[in-house]
Length: 432
Image (cartoon, rainbow, N blue to C red; front, top):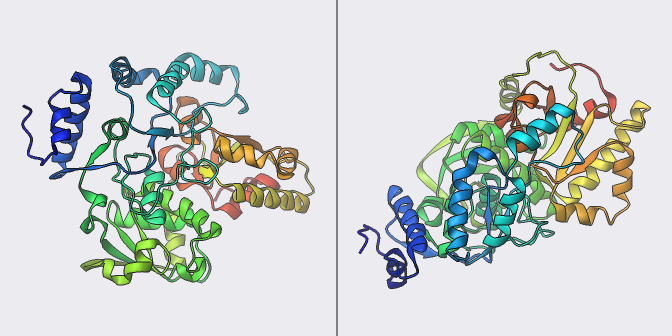
């Protein structure tokens, strides 16, 4: 029998000791080793209806991943959960030149087609379900409060933990799918009551509603992987998790998770556990951080510009990292139209890409907004902007974004939403 410090059930021990085959034994051993690394004493069942995998891109350099997944497929070890996946890296709608086509299709993403076929065999819910916002109603992978998940995508994990009250650790790619295959995950971290306590009290004292991506960035860089309890934000968001509040927290959480490593936050009087337990969630020795207008300005000014030419005029803009909601698409359409009218223009001033899940795009295209957005010259796509920019050619391009996640992981330059709107509708070369 495999030796383990964890207290496993008879079913789990049987899996570990090969009664369901060698491949399942290796899956279980991997999960046990992962749990023991973080001090887990037991496994708990995954209770959400669906899983989610962060690996959605067919990079040739990731051959060991595809080999491992093929071993799982060949062994007939089906996932106990269907699952959604992160966005795809390429879309023919996005304009490319000859060199970009060569890099994307002949060098980088040569395994995309075969990998997507592997995901079908492993149990992806549908070919439409590639998105980082799997929890949106249009997609349908929305866990319930208290559900135990096996996810890895950082922006989805922090949303599920914080806004939905589900329980999930910041797992890695491959580990999350193994949890879905086994049906169990190690019990530690955010799965425990103590692991969900707040290590920081963050007081928001701004004179206006803070930009979600900027506030999230400030908090993420300060608290890193610890849990913040945010006071004062309910002044701007209210005390109901309505569509506006959830949309704000989607973008806020993505910035906390990428600019730091936040996997859970509590918003006073708003998110489920904060509304129920209040300051009882705060640890006795919690640290404090005050955010006012000056602090947000300091944080934004601290972002480096790593363009080859810092004074270059931007040529490409991405909005939608994480993927946009249906309401965001409608609001941005109206805002872009208004900005163009004010500027006396018909089209946006640069290649501008809005990204959303295939399911949200399908619903958007049922509305009159779709033709209106297309008329402005904005491209609507299902891609992952981060993976699109993860190549040497994009590193040389002056790309702008309203996403602090995209800024953190690529050479894209961050601007607030109002600044982005100004640049794509009115132009100008003021990059200060």
